[in-house]
Image (cartoon, rainbow, N blue to C red; front, side, top):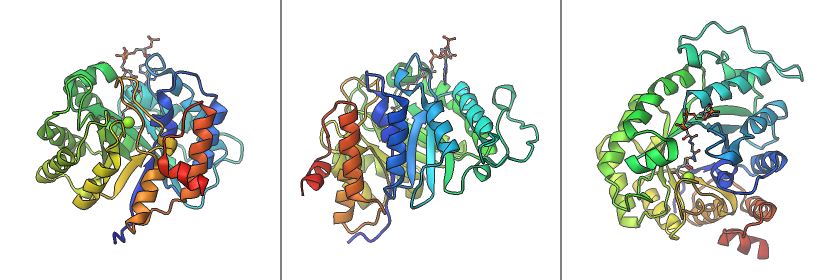
Length: 345
Ligand code: HMG
Ligand code: MG
Protein backbone atom coordinates (compact mmCIF):
# COMPACT_ATOMS: atom_id res chain seq x y z
CA UNK A 1 0.00 0.00 0.00
CA UNK A 2 1.02 3.55 -0.65
CA UNK A 3 1.16 4.85 2.90
CA UNK A 4 2.33 8.32 1.92
CA UNK A 5 0.48 11.56 2.27
CA UNK A 6 -0.72 12.93 -1.05
CA UNK A 7 -1.61 16.61 -1.24
CA UNK A 8 -4.65 17.64 -3.23
CA UNK A 9 -4.90 21.13 -4.66
CA UNK A 10 -8.57 21.92 -5.16
CA UNK A 11 -8.92 24.15 -8.22
CA UNK A 12 -12.73 24.00 -8.52
CA UNK A 13 -13.45 27.63 -7.59
CA UNK A 14 -11.01 28.82 -10.30
CA UNK A 15 -10.47 26.25 -13.08
CA UNK A 16 -13.85 24.71 -12.26
CA UNK A 17 -15.89 27.86 -12.72
CA UNK A 18 -13.87 30.04 -15.11
CA UNK A 19 -15.27 28.44 -18.26
CA UNK A 20 -18.96 28.69 -17.35
CA UNK A 21 -20.78 30.96 -19.76
CA UNK A 22 -23.61 31.94 -17.43
CA UNK A 23 -22.52 34.37 -14.75
CA UNK A 24 -22.34 32.66 -11.37
CA UNK A 25 -23.30 34.83 -8.38
CA UNK A 26 -20.32 35.77 -6.24
CA UNK A 27 -22.21 34.47 -3.18
CA UNK A 28 -22.16 31.00 -4.76
CA UNK A 29 -18.42 31.25 -5.35
CA UNK A 30 -17.80 32.26 -1.75
CA UNK A 31 -20.09 29.52 -0.50
CA UNK A 32 -18.15 26.98 -2.59
CA UNK A 33 -14.89 28.04 -0.96
CA UNK A 34 -16.49 27.93 2.52
CA UNK A 35 -17.78 24.41 1.97
CA UNK A 36 -14.48 23.18 0.51
CA UNK A 37 -12.62 24.61 3.51
CA UNK A 38 -14.50 22.18 5.78
CA UNK A 39 -13.45 19.00 3.93
CA UNK A 40 -9.85 18.67 5.08
CA UNK A 41 -8.44 20.10 1.85
CA UNK A 42 -5.38 22.23 2.63
CA UNK A 43 -4.90 24.08 -0.67
CA UNK A 44 -7.65 25.81 -2.62
CA UNK A 45 -7.20 27.88 -5.76
CA UNK A 46 -10.01 30.30 -5.15
CA UNK A 47 -10.02 32.68 -8.11
CA UNK A 48 -8.00 34.56 -10.69
CA UNK A 49 -6.92 38.14 -11.36
CA UNK A 50 -6.99 37.98 -15.15
CA UNK A 51 -8.42 40.43 -17.69
CA UNK A 52 -12.22 40.37 -17.35
CA UNK A 53 -12.52 40.86 -21.12
CA UNK A 54 -10.78 37.54 -21.53
CA UNK A 55 -12.42 35.57 -18.72
CA UNK A 56 -15.54 37.42 -17.49
CA UNK A 57 -16.49 34.69 -15.01
CA UNK A 58 -13.47 35.41 -12.80
CA UNK A 59 -14.13 39.15 -12.57
CA UNK A 60 -15.46 38.89 -9.02
CA UNK A 61 -12.38 37.16 -7.64
CA UNK A 62 -11.50 40.35 -5.74
CA UNK A 63 -14.76 39.94 -3.82
CA UNK A 64 -14.04 36.30 -3.09
CA UNK A 65 -10.62 37.24 -1.71
CA UNK A 66 -12.04 40.12 0.34
CA UNK A 67 -14.63 37.81 1.80
CA UNK A 68 -12.05 35.16 2.77
CA UNK A 69 -9.97 37.86 4.48
CA UNK A 70 -12.88 39.52 6.25
CA UNK A 71 -14.61 36.36 7.41
CA UNK A 72 -12.16 33.47 7.26
CA UNK A 73 -13.90 30.21 6.34
CA UNK A 74 -13.79 27.78 9.25
CA UNK A 75 -11.62 24.78 8.53
CA UNK A 76 -10.21 21.79 10.41
CA UNK A 77 -6.70 22.55 9.10
CA UNK A 78 -4.92 25.73 7.99
CA UNK A 79 -5.66 26.50 4.35
CA UNK A 80 -3.50 27.99 1.64
CA UNK A 81 -5.52 29.97 -0.87
CA UNK A 82 -4.01 30.42 -4.30
CA UNK A 83 -4.76 33.22 -6.77
CA UNK A 84 -4.03 32.83 -10.46
CA UNK A 85 -2.70 35.85 -12.32
CA UNK A 86 -1.08 36.50 -15.72
CA UNK A 87 0.76 39.81 -15.41
CA UNK A 88 1.77 42.72 -13.18
CA UNK A 89 -1.71 44.25 -13.45
CA UNK A 90 -3.12 41.06 -11.92
CA UNK A 91 -0.51 41.14 -9.17
CA UNK A 92 -1.27 44.80 -8.45
CA UNK A 93 -4.98 44.09 -8.21
CA UNK A 94 -4.26 41.20 -5.85
CA UNK A 95 -1.93 43.33 -3.69
CA UNK A 96 -4.60 46.05 -3.52
CA UNK A 97 -7.09 43.68 -1.90
CA UNK A 98 -4.49 42.21 0.44
CA UNK A 99 -3.50 45.72 1.54
CA UNK A 100 -7.01 47.09 1.94
CA UNK A 101 -8.38 44.10 3.75
CA UNK A 102 -5.44 43.63 6.07
CA UNK A 103 -5.91 47.16 7.39
CA UNK A 104 -9.70 46.90 7.52
CA UNK A 105 -11.28 47.81 10.85
CA UNK A 106 -13.47 44.72 11.40
CA UNK A 107 -11.35 42.91 13.95
CA UNK A 108 -8.56 42.49 11.46
CA UNK A 109 -4.95 42.90 12.59
CA UNK A 110 -3.19 45.84 10.97
CA UNK A 111 0.21 44.98 9.51
CA UNK A 112 3.28 46.96 10.61
CA UNK A 113 4.06 50.01 8.44
CA UNK A 114 5.78 48.65 5.37
CA UNK A 115 9.07 50.01 4.09
CA UNK A 116 9.13 50.74 0.36
CA UNK A 117 9.56 47.62 -1.70
CA UNK A 118 12.26 47.68 -4.36
CA UNK A 119 10.10 45.73 -6.77
CA UNK A 120 9.74 48.57 -9.27
CA UNK A 121 7.03 51.10 -9.96
CA UNK A 122 4.23 48.79 -11.10
CA UNK A 123 4.65 46.33 -8.25
CA UNK A 124 5.36 48.40 -5.18
CA UNK A 125 2.08 48.12 -3.32
CA UNK A 126 2.80 44.92 -1.43
CA UNK A 127 2.16 44.72 2.31
CA UNK A 128 4.87 43.64 4.73
CA UNK A 129 4.63 40.08 6.06
CA UNK A 130 1.18 39.63 4.54
CA UNK A 131 0.69 36.08 5.63
CA UNK A 132 1.37 37.07 9.24
CA UNK A 133 -1.41 39.62 9.14
CA UNK A 134 -4.06 37.26 7.84
CA UNK A 135 -6.10 34.98 10.07
CA UNK A 136 -4.09 32.15 11.67
CA UNK A 137 -5.88 29.45 9.72
CA UNK A 138 -5.09 30.86 6.30
CA UNK A 139 -2.24 31.93 4.06
CA UNK A 140 -2.17 33.13 0.47
CA UNK A 141 -0.11 32.30 -2.58
CA UNK A 142 0.13 33.41 -6.17
CA UNK A 143 -0.19 31.13 -9.21
CA UNK A 144 1.21 32.14 -12.55
CA UNK A 145 0.65 30.30 -15.81
CA UNK A 146 2.31 29.86 -19.15
CA UNK A 147 2.28 27.32 -21.95
CA UNK A 148 4.60 24.79 -23.55
CA UNK A 149 3.52 25.69 -27.10
CA UNK A 150 3.61 29.00 -28.95
CA UNK A 151 0.08 28.78 -30.33
CA UNK A 152 -1.53 28.11 -26.97
CA UNK A 153 0.55 30.82 -25.36
CA UNK A 154 -0.75 33.35 -27.90
CA UNK A 155 -4.36 32.21 -27.57
CA UNK A 156 -4.43 32.10 -23.78
CA UNK A 157 -2.23 35.04 -22.82
CA UNK A 158 -1.52 36.94 -26.05
CA UNK A 159 2.25 36.56 -25.82
CA UNK A 160 5.02 34.19 -26.84
CA UNK A 161 6.55 31.59 -24.53
CA UNK A 162 9.68 33.72 -24.17
CA UNK A 163 7.58 36.83 -23.45
CA UNK A 164 5.83 34.85 -20.71
CA UNK A 165 9.14 33.98 -19.11
CA UNK A 166 10.28 37.61 -19.35
CA UNK A 167 7.01 38.77 -17.82
CA UNK A 168 7.14 36.32 -14.95
CA UNK A 169 10.72 36.83 -13.84
CA UNK A 170 10.02 40.19 -12.09
CA UNK A 171 6.56 39.04 -11.09
CA UNK A 172 7.82 35.97 -9.21
CA UNK A 173 10.42 38.16 -7.52
CA UNK A 174 7.88 40.79 -6.48
CA UNK A 175 5.41 38.23 -5.20
CA UNK A 176 8.02 36.42 -3.14
CA UNK A 177 9.47 39.64 -1.77
CA UNK A 178 5.97 40.51 -0.64
CA UNK A 179 5.78 37.17 1.16
CA UNK A 180 3.64 35.17 -1.23
CA UNK A 181 5.04 31.87 -2.50
CA UNK A 182 4.52 31.25 -6.21
CA UNK A 183 3.16 28.22 -8.03
CA UNK A 184 3.80 28.12 -11.76
CA UNK A 185 1.63 26.26 -14.25
CA UNK A 186 2.92 24.88 -17.52
CA UNK A 187 -0.13 24.36 -19.74
CA UNK A 188 -0.50 21.97 -22.66
CA UNK A 189 2.42 19.86 -21.37
CA UNK A 190 0.86 16.68 -22.77
CA UNK A 191 -1.02 17.99 -25.77
CA UNK A 192 -2.05 21.24 -27.38
CA UNK A 193 -5.46 21.94 -28.91
CA UNK A 194 -3.73 23.72 -31.80
CA UNK A 195 -0.41 21.89 -32.23
CA UNK A 196 -1.53 18.35 -31.35
CA UNK A 197 -0.56 15.70 -28.79
CA UNK A 198 3.18 15.57 -29.45
CA UNK A 199 4.38 18.41 -27.30
CA UNK A 200 8.14 18.09 -26.83
CA UNK A 201 8.84 16.97 -23.25
CA UNK A 202 12.27 18.61 -23.46
CA UNK A 203 10.59 21.94 -24.14
CA UNK A 204 8.45 21.41 -21.03
CA UNK A 205 11.58 20.58 -19.04
CA UNK A 206 13.35 23.72 -20.29
CA UNK A 207 10.44 25.89 -19.22
CA UNK A 208 10.22 24.08 -15.88
CA UNK A 209 13.91 24.71 -15.28
CA UNK A 210 13.57 28.41 -16.14
CA UNK A 211 10.60 28.82 -13.80
CA UNK A 212 12.41 27.11 -10.93
CA UNK A 213 15.51 29.24 -11.56
CA UNK A 214 13.32 32.33 -11.40
CA UNK A 215 12.22 31.25 -7.94
CA UNK A 216 8.94 29.40 -8.42
CA UNK A 217 8.11 27.33 -5.33
CA UNK A 218 6.07 24.69 -7.11
CA UNK A 219 5.31 23.66 -10.67
CA UNK A 220 1.91 22.50 -11.81
CA UNK A 221 2.44 20.50 -14.97
CA UNK A 222 -0.84 20.58 -16.81
CA UNK A 223 -2.55 18.31 -19.28
CA UNK A 224 -4.93 21.06 -20.37
CA UNK A 225 -6.54 19.05 -23.15
CA UNK A 226 -6.64 15.64 -21.46
CA UNK A 227 -4.67 14.24 -24.41
CA UNK A 228 -2.04 12.80 -22.08
CA UNK A 229 -1.60 9.04 -22.11
CA UNK A 230 0.18 6.77 -19.65
CA UNK A 231 3.31 6.29 -21.83
CA UNK A 232 3.62 9.99 -22.62
CA UNK A 233 3.04 10.97 -19.00
CA UNK A 234 5.80 8.57 -17.98
CA UNK A 235 8.11 9.98 -20.64
CA UNK A 236 7.41 13.57 -19.57
CA UNK A 237 8.11 12.80 -15.92
CA UNK A 238 11.34 11.01 -16.80
CA UNK A 239 12.41 13.96 -18.92
CA UNK A 240 11.69 16.38 -16.08
CA UNK A 241 13.69 14.23 -13.70
CA UNK A 242 16.63 14.02 -16.11
CA UNK A 243 16.54 17.82 -16.33
CA UNK A 244 16.96 17.99 -12.56
CA UNK A 245 13.38 18.87 -11.60
CA UNK A 246 12.60 17.29 -8.22
CA UNK A 247 9.39 15.35 -7.68
CA UNK A 248 8.64 17.34 -4.53
CA UNK A 249 8.50 20.53 -6.61
CA UNK A 250 5.91 19.12 -9.01
CA UNK A 251 2.15 18.82 -8.90
CA UNK A 252 0.30 17.22 -11.81
CA UNK A 253 -2.83 18.86 -13.21
CA UNK A 254 -4.92 16.43 -15.24
CA UNK A 255 -8.01 17.27 -17.21
CA UNK A 256 -10.14 14.20 -17.85
CA UNK A 257 -11.31 14.90 -21.40
CA UNK A 258 -10.32 11.43 -22.66
CA UNK A 259 -10.91 9.65 -19.34
CA UNK A 260 -7.17 9.17 -18.76
CA UNK A 261 -6.70 11.37 -15.69
CA UNK A 262 -6.62 8.57 -13.10
CA UNK A 263 -4.37 6.38 -15.23
CA UNK A 264 -1.99 9.29 -15.63
CA UNK A 265 -2.27 9.90 -11.88
CA UNK A 266 -1.25 6.28 -11.26
CA UNK A 267 1.78 6.66 -13.53
CA UNK A 268 2.71 9.87 -11.69
CA UNK A 269 2.35 8.18 -8.28
CA UNK A 270 4.64 5.37 -9.46
CA UNK A 271 7.12 8.01 -10.51
CA UNK A 272 7.00 9.56 -7.02
CA UNK A 273 4.75 12.58 -7.52
CA UNK A 274 2.73 13.36 -4.37
CA UNK A 275 0.64 16.41 -5.31
CA UNK A 276 -2.33 16.59 -7.67
CA UNK A 277 -4.79 19.25 -8.79
CA UNK A 278 -8.49 18.41 -9.06
CA UNK A 279 -11.94 19.99 -9.00
CA UNK A 280 -15.08 18.84 -7.19
CA UNK A 281 -17.76 17.48 -9.48
CA UNK A 282 -15.17 17.22 -12.27
CA UNK A 283 -15.76 20.89 -13.06
CA UNK A 284 -13.40 22.78 -15.23
CA UNK A 285 -12.01 23.74 -18.57
CA UNK A 286 -9.92 26.42 -20.11
CA UNK A 287 -11.79 28.98 -22.23
CA UNK A 288 -8.89 29.00 -24.71
CA UNK A 289 -8.69 25.22 -25.06
CA UNK A 290 -11.62 24.34 -27.33
CA UNK A 291 -13.22 20.98 -26.50
CA UNK A 292 -11.28 20.45 -23.30
CA UNK A 293 -13.50 19.44 -20.40
CA UNK A 294 -13.18 19.22 -16.66
CA UNK A 295 -10.37 18.56 -14.27
CA UNK A 296 -10.18 15.14 -12.71
CA UNK A 297 -12.91 15.12 -10.06
CA UNK A 298 -11.64 15.56 -6.51
CA UNK A 299 -14.02 12.80 -5.37
CA UNK A 300 -12.61 10.33 -7.93
CA UNK A 301 -9.05 11.26 -7.03
CA UNK A 302 -9.66 10.94 -3.28
CA UNK A 303 -11.44 7.60 -3.75
CA UNK A 304 -8.58 6.23 -5.87
CA UNK A 305 -5.87 7.52 -3.54
CA UNK A 306 -7.56 6.09 -0.45
CA UNK A 307 -7.97 2.73 -2.20
CA UNK A 308 -4.19 2.72 -2.67
CA UNK A 309 -3.64 3.37 1.03
CA UNK A 310 -2.56 6.98 0.56
CA UNK A 311 -3.58 9.61 3.07
CA UNK A 312 -5.17 12.82 1.85
CA UNK A 313 -6.97 14.09 4.94
CA UNK A 314 -9.93 14.82 2.67
CA UNK A 315 -13.46 13.70 3.48
CA UNK A 316 -14.89 11.89 0.45
CA UNK A 317 -18.54 12.22 1.50
CA UNK A 318 -18.24 15.95 2.15
CA UNK A 319 -16.61 16.45 -1.24
CA UNK A 320 -19.29 14.34 -2.90
CA UNK A 321 -22.02 16.53 -1.41
CA UNK A 322 -20.24 19.66 -2.56
CA UNK A 323 -19.71 18.29 -6.07
CA UNK A 324 -23.40 17.46 -6.32
CA UNK A 325 -24.42 20.85 -4.93
CA UNK A 326 -22.17 23.04 -7.10
CA UNK A 327 -22.90 21.19 -10.36
CA UNK A 328 -26.59 21.62 -9.54
CA UNK A 329 -26.11 25.33 -8.83
CA UNK A 330 -24.56 25.91 -12.23
CA UNK A 331 -26.90 23.54 -14.05
CA UNK A 332 -24.36 20.90 -15.03
CA UNK A 333 -24.27 17.15 -14.62
CA UNK A 334 -22.12 15.84 -11.78
CA UNK A 335 -19.11 14.43 -13.66
CA UNK A 336 -17.73 12.52 -10.66
CA UNK A 337 -18.49 8.79 -10.74
CA UNK A 338 -17.13 8.26 -7.23
CA UNK A 339 -19.12 11.27 -6.02
CA UNK A 340 -22.41 10.02 -7.43
CA UNK A 341 -21.78 6.47 -6.19
CA UNK A 342 -20.85 7.70 -2.72
CA UNK A 343 -24.08 9.67 -2.44
CA UNK A 344 -26.13 6.71 -3.70
CA UNK A 345 -24.76 4.38 -1.00
P1 HMG B 1 -3.92 41.58 -23.56
O1 HMG B 1 -5.19 41.94 -24.25
O2 HMG B 1 -2.69 41.37 -24.36
O3 HMG B 1 -3.59 42.58 -22.34
O4 HMG B 1 -4.22 40.25 -22.73
P2 HMG B 1 -3.35 44.11 -22.31
O5 HMG B 1 -2.24 44.33 -21.36
O6 HMG B 1 -3.24 44.67 -23.70
O7 HMG B 1 -4.70 44.66 -21.65
C1 HMG B 1 -5.96 44.58 -22.31
C2 HMG B 1 -7.03 45.05 -21.34
O8 HMG B 1 -7.14 44.15 -20.24
C3 HMG B 1 -6.72 46.40 -20.69
O9 HMG B 1 -7.96 47.01 -20.39
C4 HMG B 1 -6.04 46.03 -19.41
O10 HMG B 1 -6.14 47.00 -18.43
C5 HMG B 1 -6.82 44.79 -19.01
P3 HMG B 1 -8.58 48.19 -21.31
O11 HMG B 1 -7.52 49.24 -21.29
O12 HMG B 1 -8.74 47.58 -22.67
O13 HMG B 1 -9.84 48.52 -20.61
N1 HMG B 1 -6.04 43.87 -18.19
C6 HMG B 1 -6.42 43.40 -17.00
N2 HMG B 1 -7.50 43.62 -16.24
C7 HMG B 1 -7.57 42.98 -15.07
N3 HMG B 1 -6.64 42.12 -14.62
C8 HMG B 1 -5.53 41.87 -15.35
C9 HMG B 1 -5.40 42.52 -16.60
N4 HMG B 1 -4.46 42.50 -17.55
C10 HMG B 1 -4.85 43.33 -18.51
N5 HMG B 1 -4.62 41.00 -14.91
C11 HMG B 1 -3.79 38.97 -20.73
C12 HMG B 1 -3.20 39.63 -21.98
C13 HMG B 1 -2.71 38.08 -20.16
C14 HMG B 1 -4.19 40.04 -19.77
C15 HMG B 1 -5.03 38.16 -21.15
O14 HMG B 1 -4.68 37.32 -22.22
C16 HMG B 1 -5.60 37.32 -20.05
O15 HMG B 1 -6.11 37.82 -19.06
N6 HMG B 1 -5.54 35.99 -20.19
C17 HMG B 1 -6.01 35.10 -19.18
C18 HMG B 1 -6.65 33.90 -19.82
C19 HMG B 1 -7.11 32.94 -18.73
O16 HMG B 1 -7.42 33.33 -17.62
N7 HMG B 1 -7.17 31.64 -19.08
C20 HMG B 1 -7.59 30.64 -18.14
C21 HMG B 1 -6.62 30.40 -17.04
S1 HMG B 1 -5.26 29.39 -17.53
C22 HMG B 1 -5.88 27.78 -17.43
O17 HMG B 1 -7.04 27.58 -17.24
C23 HMG B 1 -4.91 26.66 -17.52
C24 HMG B 1 -4.63 26.02 -16.14
O18 HMG B 1 -5.81 25.52 -15.56
C25 HMG B 1 -3.65 24.88 -16.34
C26 HMG B 1 -4.10 23.99 -17.49
O19 HMG B 1 -5.08 23.25 -17.33
O20 HMG B 1 -3.43 24.11 -18.54
C27 HMG B 1 -3.98 27.03 -15.19
MG1 MG C 1 -6.69 23.59 -16.01
